[in-house]
Image 1 (tube, helix red, strand yellow):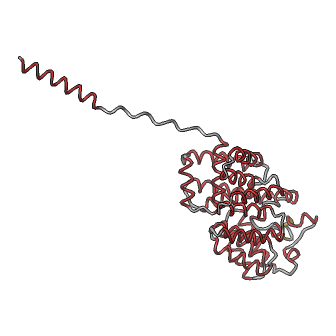
Image 2 (image 1 turned 90 degrees about the vertical axis):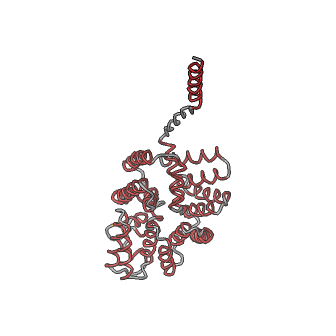
Image 3 (image 1 turned 45 degrees about the vertical axis):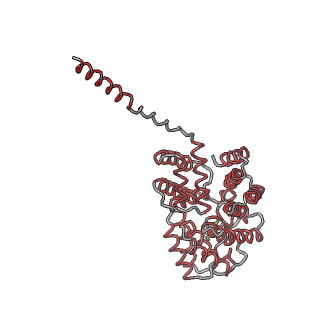
Length: 347
């Protein structure tokens, strides 16, 4: 009897021990925060700014992981963002260029979707350009193909400020082969359609016919830069500068390519050369700001962005860069104000 009682007590004790040894159930995972459209847009603009500075594929992926935004959320937001851009009456050439560059980075679905939207933006803008649009696009075109290079006997964008059509030969001041000019225009068309490889091939063919066609060298360099072939882009810009050392767009393009190769000191020298030729070339001030941020000279970068904004207060990319410089300087409220300015100008 005593043994049976003892066994019952022992079994009960073992049950109590097993019960208290159980680990408590883990708490449920925190709910995924719901981000506003503006929050996603700010993160995306930071990403594009990094791509413009020459981030590697690893740095891009690191940023995406750090953003804690899931791939599906990025994709859904990008689709809505793209739809808004494509129906907007505003020009988005620079934004399209940066999105194409993100697409060329091959960083997963976000690159694919961004690249597709960017190519649609470039193609859509090229189809909608008319002489009446010149005043609104002239500030962004030089980063792509050069404002004076968008003209031909039947396409007079660069001649609208004089009120007359200007051919390539007239704008350069010497005779250009019709075959070279035709291939050049094909390159512009392919570029605007998002066919970067086709554009490179067309510009190269134009240059085989006329190696002194410096605007074609510049356009080739710009396209190679977007394609990510920055060493080849620098060689093309140098060829343009051999022919015309005062061609400030080529100095800017070369500085941009050097920035992406992390040669920031040399890039700043080229931006300064461009600004020595045209001190009001606000895009070069913006490029200088990017290179200075890369070197950690945040106060100098802030001054460069402010110079760009003195010239063009509506230049939303410089507002975004100013916000980045202020953030690095710890001026968070001012940084937020600058980012809000950027969003106001490119909602």
